[in-house]
Length: 299
Length: 185
Image: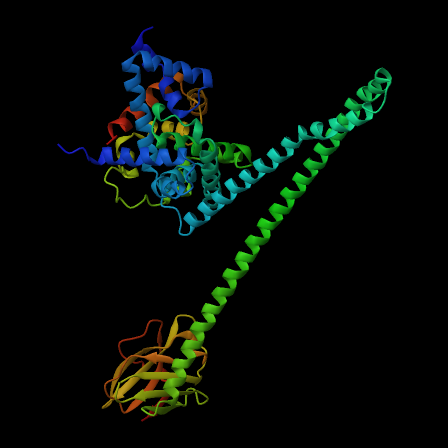
């Protein structure tokens, strides 16, 4: 055989791609063992395809590692369990013989007419034994099947329970976080150092009402919305502190704050005599658009 | 002369991993996942094109690898090659088994979501990026390797699919794989 022709026949590529039959694979392996050139070439081809595979590596999404490893473990446990039940179903096939055979002995022993008495059970027994074996095997199979079904149902229940538990602890965590936030807000409202500043609606929005809590020592500012008109998409309320007539940005109001669902801590303000809220493009503006002023109030 | 070159270190971890898998050590599968998941997932995703399917196939492949591990022969090749082929075969079986098959044969592989995915960050110095491959292979070669590797086509099927003489397909495939093997580090 011409080795170069063999190498160029494309069979090594087919080997590496895994499209050869078992016999063809064995043949390639045999030739590679005999001809170092073929072995070297084969190694190159396999290595080249490995490079190609590796170049396509993609980091799996978050959480996949846990899911895949857990799924894998469950799958191999289930197979191990199945194997066990099959084994227990197989094993008893031999044992009934041992149980049954003594039964035929006592029948034969007391009788004197050995030839007659013995023959009958002997002829009858194999049939009966076979029947009993078949019955017990069938029962065991049924029981194995039942076990398997119960086992998979148990697994399912366990999985559901786990989901429920995760759900519950997630819920508890969000509730706790919400409670912490409320506690913090309450401590602001109760704190004497915070001065409430009523912001009343301008003629543009006479119904609007908000309150600012300003701590002149720590410079902390909180805003509590009672009622602000809903804004169109892309707009956001922005709080301003007025210090000697100059507006200072105190930050934009989150949508939950603007809706009155929660009070919000704003940027610290060094000094102010008044606060006002204007409507600005989402994200806030560097200076207030005075024509959109919604509420304003002096300290 | 120190023996701890990166290659020998990598070989050593592979030998240890193979030993642990042979000993049916379940913990080894976590190491296996950390070491190979991005390469395996990338190739599977490229074949099945859907993330959930790719995840299912990877899990299925790991079960298969675990059960058929006794048939892995380290003498015949790297663990990576063996497990990659298990994954590739399962993924190809998957796309051939379902309605998946309809239309996807003629659909250019370049349109797949997998190609738009960023390759994994290059923290492994031996890792070769897709860009490098694209630069080194011409489009004809790339198309053939893709059909062979990701489509599970034989060389004759590729010839039929692309309406090319079998000899041309073989020559191009060989040339392409030769280019790739020069990139082995």
